[in-house]
Amino acid sequence: MNALATPAARLAVSPYARRLARERGLPLSALRGSGPGGRILAADVTGFVAPAASVPVESRPAQAPAQRIAAFAISVALGQASEALAALARSGSTFDLDDLVLLAAGRALGAVPIETATALALEMDGRQVVLYRMGAALGVLRAERQRASAEGRNDALEPATLSLKLLRAGAVRPVLVPLLPGRPMRLVAALDQDGQRAECLLVFDASLVAEDTAADWLAAFGSGLASPLSILV
Image (cartoon, rainbow, N blue to C red; front, side, top):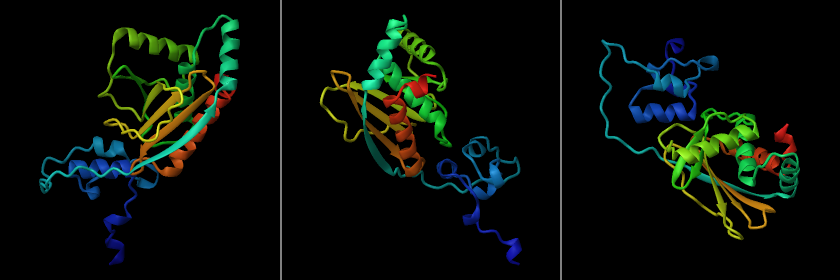
């Protein structure tokens, strides 16, 4: 008898898939998992099609999903970054710190496994530009950023794992900023006027991104920015 009863609580479900199913009023028992060991992933929820003869799901009052906001901070010395930019300039390639911050963020997304990882959204003058080629070279990212700026593109409604905001704030250190809609992570990097240090704050929804994962991502980002030769090659 026990073999015939499988409690729903034992279903292997990712946090993001569980949240999507709750928002859409879908019972987890109706979903077929495509992940390892039958784990239900977000794609299984978004791709679910109810059978024609199925009983309509009981309607329930819509409830806003609860967020669990958490934040980590890191201070990054930019001495090696400045030296790398100067060396690139001497070779005829002109880049700036914004380019290196963007490169470090994209490489960290590729290095740390995050289930919801899709793309990076760069915040520009009240707009967002989604960059899908997170592992692209520095020159490619710079060209894409400049092209998006010239076109006035706004990808605020496009999916992205992380939004990135760059500040020229002098001695200001970011303490808390809100998440942008549809973005489970947000990084604010405040660069000092001398370009010698970046005060970085990562805010994230801990119901979607585990704290250990967020900490690993921020460490990978800080390491890449502090030692850019590791991400330039």
